[in-house]
Image (cartoon, rainbow, N blue to C red; front, top):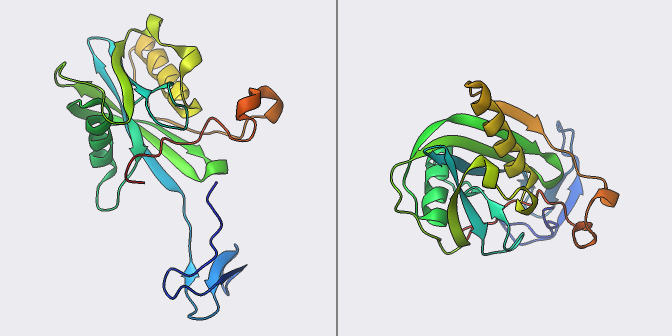
Length: 204
């Protein structure tokens, strides 16, 4: 969840939460200068890159989900396209060069105010390595995917869709929305934080 917005980014005066005229949702409003602070969902972008039927995955070297496996992905930066962000994140986390393919998955995670966008991609060569945010980078056959060690539900859903589509020979575009898991289905250590929390990259 986003931290509370207490002070105006324009004049540093305190803000109050109320619904502005003509709006329908509470916003942070500065009573000193009148600035209305809009807080919108963040975009997480990444790539499902393959090489001869194997999928490139990274073992996370940062929290959340340290030591868990994911696809190379992270927050989109200002000034870049979604496609550029997916290519950049793959280079940063896996030191891998890719040819980006079609959009594959767009998964909304409303309870943490995020949308996760995954592209299919092709590795250009085998010259990959762990970036600063990864402990290890590997190519996995479907049979070897560490399903019990996947960092985020969005990544697991994307991988499931990929292998299912590959079996029938037709790749679609998968859109869905994930709700917060019931607290009694989560391990004790995770009951205060959903496993959807996105991978915060070094620039976020």
